[in-house]
Structures are given as structure tokens and as C-alpha cells.
Image (cartoon, rainbow, N blue to C red; front, side, top):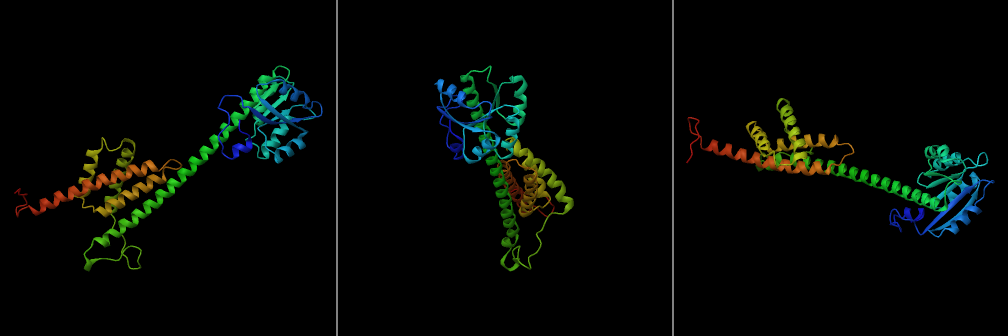
Length: 319
């Protein structure tokens, strides 16, 4: 079983989960009534694993040793009024030892002390009058294993939270870059004589957005479509995408305006994710706007063809 020092280096455990480690380095914090000689002799008599036992007498000496050195586990002797293990546990946790495996030993029954020790932050309480040394070894081993699992879970949660923060930052940067590109397309697509300065220049015109009366219902419809697309994908939404593209085309919404509508809705959705991952939403949104733009382009192509083949009577003539 890896010691506390080895764990801090993110090394893999030397013992598979659920098995006794070949060696455990422990600190026994005792009072003046019951020193650790009997415990060391008991550990030596059992060959299941090697237990290296070091001793500290009193609360002050115990806390000092824990500040100066690292141990796989700590055993605390509950000897009121000489040594109160619950007070020592409070001092240990207050000093940042919340990942230190701790087992309390005493003469009181487990029914009397177990709950109090758990509430104070211990991993277990063992009544030395009713246990065996093999049971004590397994209790200490399980305490070490539990603390390692708790520490590993905390590291995974912190890593996941950091990854999601990076995802949200990257999503915001990507949306800002896409918006900048979209706002520049209007000036770039104009003929040379009519080209306007790009957004960001001092004399750049304000981006042409949809009227509020048109933008609000289209935003609501696109928002609902995007939410459904994120969950279901494109398999069952092809008709809905085509219908929305027809509405955009009939409303004479330009590709630039459609992209700005998409970015506004997507930014709102990303902000509403909170601590949840943004990668899936961004990937799905990219696919949706691609499908929508293809349908919108096809819709405008059909309308241009109809205009070019419409006669003076307003009827479309097929050649």
C-alpha cells in the first residue's frame, strides 16, 4: 500500500484494492496510562503484514510528529482524562489532516464510541478488549484504502471541474471568433465599389440585425430546435430544419443574420449550462447550423430560379 508521501506523487498503489499491503507505517499516539509496547509486540506476532509502529506520547507530541512526518495511518489511544481522542481528532482535522487515515483504540464498547469517532473524523473505532490483532490490521488497512479512495475521488472531481472551465472558456472564445467572422462577411461580400469598412473600424456601420418583431419568434423557435437537436441529433429533425429554413428564406433572412441568430441562442445556452460540459452542445450546434445553412441556401436557390422563370403574369414557366 502506498504511503501518504507516495500518494502525493500520484504514484499507482503498490497493492491491489481489497488486499492487505505488505507494509504499513503507523504512528501510535498514546497517553501515559497505556504506551505502545504491547501494540508493537502484537503486530510483530502476526505475519499477515509488516506494521512499522512509531509512538508519540500526548496530544502535543502527536500533532508535532504529524506535522513533521508522513504516515500511512494514525492510531489514537482513547484514555480519558489523560488523552481524549476526540479532541485530538479536532486538532488534527483543523490542521489540514482531513486525508489522514485515523483509527481510535479504547476500552469502551464500539456501541458507545463508534458514532462519536465517526462524527469527529475518524475512520474507525476498535475496542481493544474485544478485537484481535488480525482484525485491527484489516481495520487499519481499510482506513488507508478508504482515505485513498476519497482523495482520488476529490482529485477526479477537481480535474473534471477544471476541464469544464476550460471547455466553457474555449466555447466563449470560439463564439466570439465566429461572431467576428460573421460580422465581417457583409463588408467582404459587397462589390469593391460598395464595400464597407470591417466591424471594429472607427467608421464601421452597426451590424444589420433582424427586427425585434421577427427576431424574438425566430429565436424562440431556433432555441427549441437546438435543444432538441442536442438531445436527439439530426435523425428525426430533418423536416423541422427544412421548415425553419423555409421560414427564414421567406422572411428574407440573410445568411449573416441567420448566423448571428444562431450565435445569440448558442451563447445563451452555453451560459445556462453552469458547471456542465459545453463540448457536446458546441459540437451539436455546429452540425445544426451547417444543416440549416445548406437548407437555407437551397431555399434561396429555388426562389432565385422561380424569379428568373416567372412571367409577366406572375406564373413560373418551366422550360
